[in-house]
Image (cartoon, helix red, strand yellow):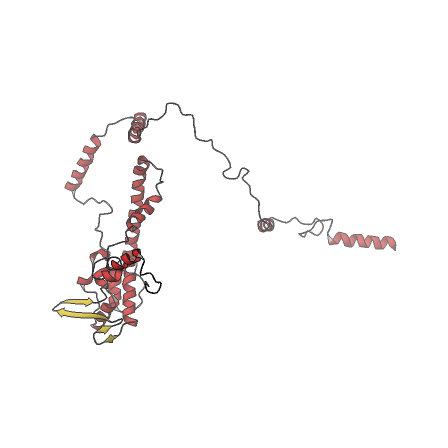
Length: 316
């Protein structure tokens, strides 16, 4: 690229090219990067999560009140994803038993990545001595019940997921399940222990009595007060946090309620189509002579015929 666009003399590009082994992923295949995100991804995801509950002008009190709501939303989303992973089965693309086993141990999102590699191992990988697709070398060793597979593409080392070349070897050796030493716990459905997201009390009278005693001790330290005093103490507490006392006289009050919101008259200009639809829904008036719709007695055909007959008799 530097030769093609004649950029060899550019100092910045030369310096970046010199340290290419520090930023190009191809040079990092031997490093474990399965839990690594981009430099700003964590802060961006955190900002996005709190943007639904906070504003850049919010104070500390607003943040404290909204923090629990943001955490509750994340816990709800986590519980929903866990429920989907444990109660539903993703669609399989091959008849292999190893794919079904992968759908049972991995979460849905991780299984989709595994499924792509497994599908490609069936339709894109072929054996040529010890060389498999794209000149990726796979070494298979078995000692007793334990096996070891290493691939030159380093996909498992970097991402923690089996690559298509390793799946090809497992299929060739007729493995129906993924070996346990190639299943990382971080991708499994049971990564979050039971009771971590929701607090549970064991069915034990001693533990329950101890928990109730702790609640009573906490409750005894909270002073009992009436509603007016509670409201006053809450206001004082907020004033201490903000550092500004509430004014004695309030000159600005909430606006009075209005009947119409948005448009002043509560009406809007209707299109021709809406008018036609509304007109078609209304009951049409019937003619008083023939009792048929879409005309009145003045334009009724019976009246016109009657007037013609009367004129003919008069002329005759």
